[in-house]
Amino acid sequence: MRKYAYLKKPLPCSDSGLIYKIMLYQTAPDEIYLFEYCARDAVMSSYDLYYTDISDLYDEWNDKTDENGWTDIDDPLPDCQHDAFLPIRIKGRNTGKPEWGSFEILKDGKWTDFIQ
Image (cartoon, rainbow, N blue to C red):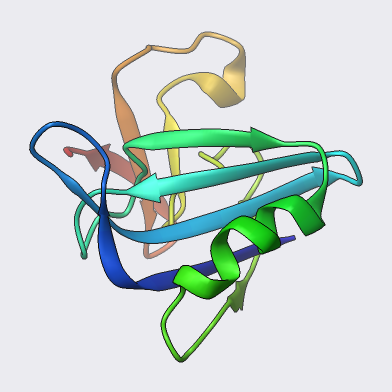
């Protein structure tokens, strides 16, 4: 399960950045990730947090989300980044030969280079 939300008020994420939106990704009942995005239009996260209880995550973040609340989105495609809003993967991950730091995106049914 994946859901994202925009924050009512941006929160500090570093000395110079702000968190504008968040995404939760639950992979098991006791395995939940919260991704933080330090740009309104970011497609991949800047930071992440780990939770073992979904209610703890909601308790911490529900009051900080804007009036739209949480929006459901599809789980990532196989081999794709869990925090990416678009189908993005590490090059070669699908063949077992990942090229760390190099990404590709699925566009019009084809994988092409993705530059962040």
